[in-house]
Image (tube, rainbow, N blue to C red; front, side):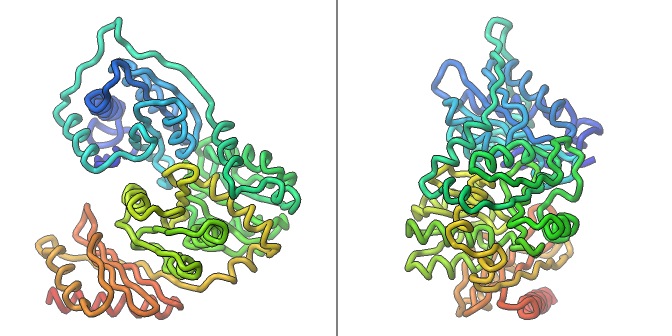
Amino acid sequence: MTLIKSISGIRGTIGGKPSEGLSPLDVVKFTAAYAKWLKSASSTAKQKVVVGRDARISGEMVNALVCATLSGMGIDVVNLGLATTPTTEIAVTGEQADGGIILTASHNPKQWNALKLLNAKGEFISAEDGAAILKYAEEESFEFADVDDLGSMSEKDYTAEHVRQVLNLELVDAAAVQAANFSVAFDAVNSVGGIAIPALLEALGVKNIVPINEEPTGEFAHVPEPLPENLVETCRIVQEKNVDVCFVVDPDVDRLSIISEDGSMFNEEYTLVAIADYVLAQTPGNTVSNMSSSRALRVVTEKYGCSYAASAVGEVNVVNKMRETNAIIGGEGNGGIIYPASHYGRDALVGIALFLTQLAKSGLKCSELRETYPDFFISKNKIELTPEIDVDAVLVKMYEKYQHEEVTDIDGVKIDFANKWVHLRKSNTEPIIRIYAEAPTMAEADQLAQSIIQDIKSLIG
């Protein structure tokens, strides 16, 4: 059994003893701590929280515990039931709520679940707020409401409203998508994408929709992270069904991966690159991605004479950097699209609508569109260290060694060379350094990573 408490929420495997797995007691305690934080941060007499969940098997049970606990803390609850993460985020502002809780373990297997916490903007809470909630949970310093002060509970479906808002985006052209007469497949990995994606495609005028793993049973048909090694069968189906494009999402629909008409992976790193290309062509502006994302976004951004900035890893860090630089689009190389014209959260539905509009207006096949972007390849490695080694000191020495290059240390150490980069980050849970390297070929990326690994080994003797 596993239970991981962090400043962004709590996640773990279902079952086990309290504090060893994500048990009902842990769910109640953490929800109550969030409720206390919310009440302390709010100036209103009565607070409201939106709750949404993905389709994983434990979702209904965890949802009941969370909603009842919030009510027991005197907070009104708007229960969305099955809803994507971005749907829950827009519902927070739509309902003028004080916060939100998303019940999803994202790309983790079915035995996992998690509580992800939102503020009144429908965005993930800050590190400072997360630390306060963890402290409240640890101390159990919360007090439940008297019987006359219990919170109310209501139910609401926000999927249609989410789809409506996506279609109202200025750069989404439903008429162009409909005129293209696309055949579109989607793989929802048996979660809430099976509800939201067909609703969006139908609203965009797509007539031929090919669903794959669409039933929201929570029995994931494959490993739910939308990576190439998990989508071999989906790629085969795409070739067999003769579709124009296939969209693949994770269980909570905030990550978007694309498969081209020939069954080849568009590459999830290029989801953001392609959509940013379309957005920048219409509305030039700045872009942001995290430091471990592909350089291709920087290349595309500079093509339009605009500025690119890198943030520390983590959605909340990307959002903060986007606000700081007034970026018009940003996200993460895992297929996460953040489009402020919609909202400040990763949203696969926004990504699908923008990409289909782009594809329709380009007149290109999906694989042909991919060929218009520069090729970069990422090599992902790690080096295990003994517990007594000071990882921070190693990173400082690496920074000093390469200070003649373009080096950034806001999140580990990232070294930018002329046409490649390497990013070194320490793990928060184990004595390892993660080493991501990107170059124009996989061989060059692997070679760069190995060179850096040898540098680290020589530093630690």
